[in-house]
Length: 90
View 1 (cartoon, one colour):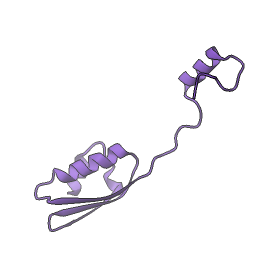
View 2 (cartoon, rainbow, N blue to C red):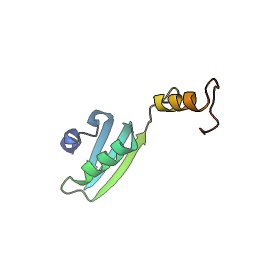
View 3 (cartoon, helix red, strand yellow):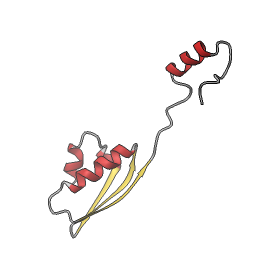
């Protein structure tokens, strides 16, 4: 089972714990996105002999956005020059 996760390019296998018992695979640990969680679950279900999957994976999103995106900043400058916030943006 661990080999299937290692071959899945969208999954960081080293962050996922795997237990197998009587055809039931349990995945545990933390992943960085819901897509990675989904890909790990699909990889586990591809393994021959799997009857059930228990996914105890927690998604820990990283807070990477510190301010407005460059496009939003440019829009605010052209829409409402000299104002801190633009009336057209939420």
